[in-house]
Image 1 (tube, rainbow, N blue to C red):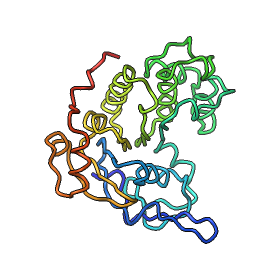
Image 2: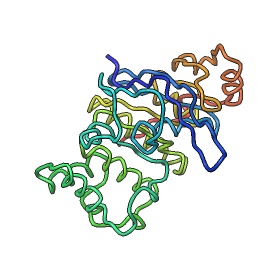
Image 3: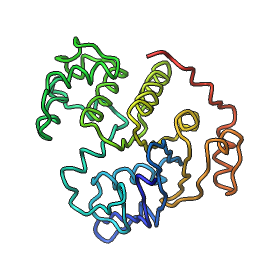
Image 4: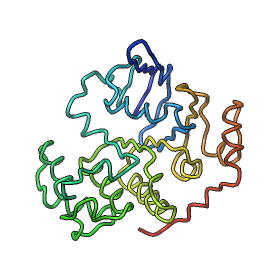
Length: 258
């Protein structure tokens, strides 16, 4: 069953007389419980897709369906119970003057969850952080710990869909595999649907069942994980992208126990 359906999504940014089309008739569908990748070079529009889905780009053409329902603007509060986003830079996405406790508990209070104290402690445990991290500030955490806190914030509202915008690109290579394995485990345990944006094909191969390739704001083609691993593609741009990644292997990301 389709969980998220993007249909003919177009976005144009304007400043005075200048117009830049960031997205041009982008279409794809993500199945419930699937991990779906969006890849492409910098400026290809892949992150713009996520921002359009979660309402950070209010002006657009086309439709976005979530669990069979067409999303209307402005997005309603219950949308954010269903869809959450993890950003590339955890330090920028966490308020520097708020403790991790406040970051997590505020979302619960806004959405009227009960048992806030218990939920905050459980959310930290779920991402591998103990209670000692609860009253720390973001600058007191390492990059990997901050991203775990950001993941906890996204999951504490019990969403169905999680949008991942380059979730490990700001982390050291030694930490990337830990965070990716954590995300993979949480998806399976909670039957989550992921949409993952990344320029790193080894990350996409590790995480995603299918992926769409983008160039200049448009979809080039959709391929499977097996196509990616075996360097199989129909379109010249995708072939070039895969050739540029020669030497990567899925097992470069060695599983790490969480």
